[in-house]
Amino acid sequence: MFLSNQWIDLYSFVKKNYLVIEGVPSKIERLEPRYGKRCWEIVINDVKLSLPLKLKKEEIKRGMEIQYLPHSKFILKYKVLEK
Image 1: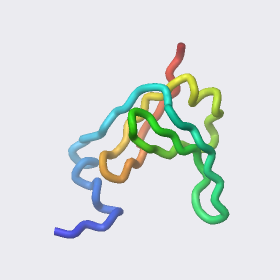
Image 2: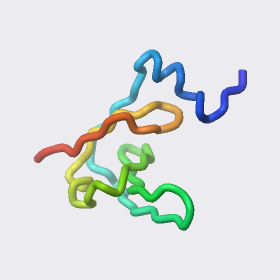
Image 3: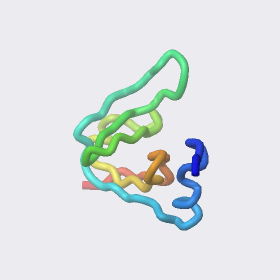
Image 4: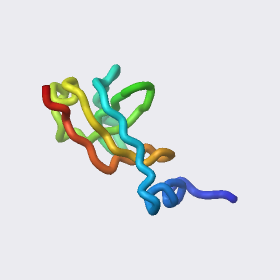
């Protein structure tokens, strides 16, 4: 069965089958394309995710706990870890 990208995580969303990753990013890069979404691209434990620019780089460096959908990597919740 063929599923388009917009529906690929529907089952995971309905069943609340979210993935949670926690840690300090090994890579933090600010993406500002001419067209498209501006965001922070981070890598934690070999998982590449996009975070909104409203976060500061210093906050991201402290560590993050992120809840996301498994296939699309769409972030549902995130929080900065306190040290």
